[in-house]
Length: 232
Picture 1 (spheres, rainbow, N blue to C red):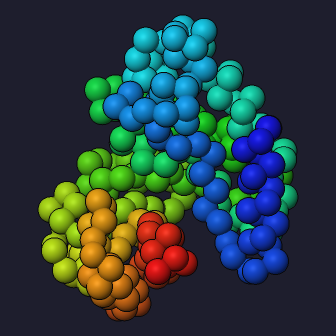
Picture 2: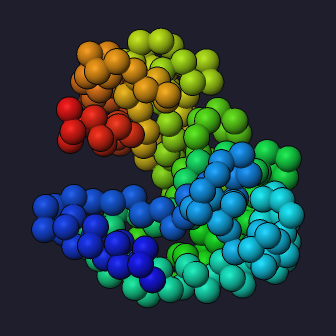
């Protein structure tokens, strides 16, 4: 409940400041086995070490026992938060393709689509729904699913064959979706995903914004580096 309370505070502040949120219902690290910490697979209650029944994060996508728990959690989040006017959309999981899903990709796709339909059915405020991908070009057919109502992914420099210059990265990303009749957003960008010197990050942040204005996107790119924007 502590995290739900934190969500409340963030949403209240966004309402006051006129900020809109792509509300992710969970982070991919919850089922990513190569990361450590209480917010990752290491602390997941489904993990056998924590009293659950799973020995692998990939089982999240294939074990029928997960769905009822997932839907109870989603119903709680929708009941508690969905009335906030600060929510732009409801999204199932961040960086789906990073969540121990590659080996069971079709199952992960199906599970995600099922959960997005559940969110849509439960949400009395009819928010648009979508799901975030880390690598934009892993599976272009994913974005054609009816449950993906707008496209969102990352456009860091040199990610998945993107150029080294940020404006061109944004441009190439946008052109990849020219034949999709859906809104397209870049929801992470600004230099290299591992970080850059401050001067380069500043250049790439502004370059990406201008690249977004000059490309066929549905909004300017969203920087991942909030600590750089507000700290430095």
